[in-house]
Length: 229
Image (cartoon, rainbow, N blue to C red; front, side):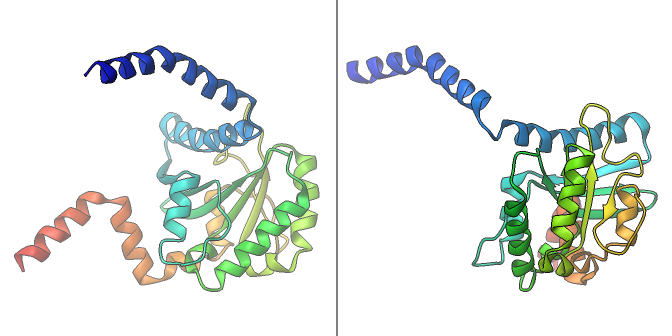
């Protein structure tokens, strides 16, 4: 008993220092800007829906949840997107994968990730949904677009890019998103659904599954009815 009490006391005494070390490590982490940027994307969409109406963030998974969902039916893991979302507006919606770029990653690394997406898309239908690349500056976006467009793997994917400044730009509001191929003018996030086909959203089995995920109450009702039958 004495040893247990002593151990508990030691843990309580050192706990503040452990928390401080973790906080310091996070503050110095090279991933901090990336983590906060991807979170900003979600917050900006939710804020726009709350303050202006006309749109709704139906679904958002972070990096870990998105990867768990994408590779649940696959034995082989592939690229990990920064998020998976479903944005609804004007009577329609668009499901997408997010790649948030802080400008510190070398472009060949982005190309390598694109190749990984294309390889996985051949056997994993979920990875055929639109892939959105968000860049911090217009200069970075222009350089990345040239590199991505010149990659053969980009022809097998549905890609759009945008230069979005977290301080002033909302991902859903203006004409900011440009499909990588096809010569389209900049458009709103919701309008991408009309020019970037998404086979994952059109397959009946996936539509039914996604609807259940977005409406847990309906799923519970179906289970009750199934038990009664």
